[in-house]
Image (tube, rainbow, N blue to C red):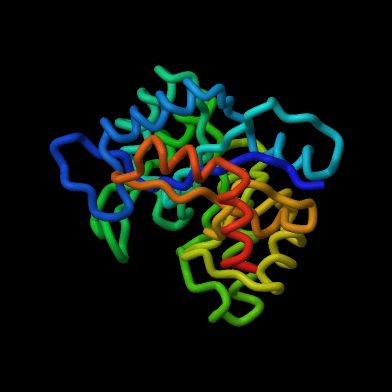
Length: 241
């Protein structure tokens, strides 16, 4: 049986005076998203809750939700966290372990500051959950087995050392994964792994390729409501096997 639990995908939350760059939303847009979600009765759950539900051993709230943030930008602390706390939502943040305390070294938002180790601990103490996003954010399918295993397993171990607690969730860089990457995630001891496949429902067999709901600066109330609906999930599954 499938489990309904949308996982919204974000990266950055920036001031309203800043022009969004494709992987960011302004504080105003993010606050609107949270207000709609709260109005509709959504409640935050942790990756462990979703994994337990996929095992069949736990019931989730009527409208469960996971808010995910890729790459571990510092604005997750300075801009996103206050809005999350005000709205009563949690978050699942995926930092790139080798880049902790540094700056993003590729793609959009290149050069933007990333969370430092003490900032990650500060957010964890405030109730934010952390998952691994590998060591260096590589294209995993292009790597030899030994390197792919290290990226997946060592990032979990090092993040656990930093947090002094278990890390249960993995996020595949660029959303790229295959059967090998899923096997390596399972072997490393993760309980679930997130991709960028579209959808809002999950099956037990998909715990290592969980779908997420795409949102951005231009996501309207009507569009977000649709992406949380069953028809959206049906349409997404027709488009993405």
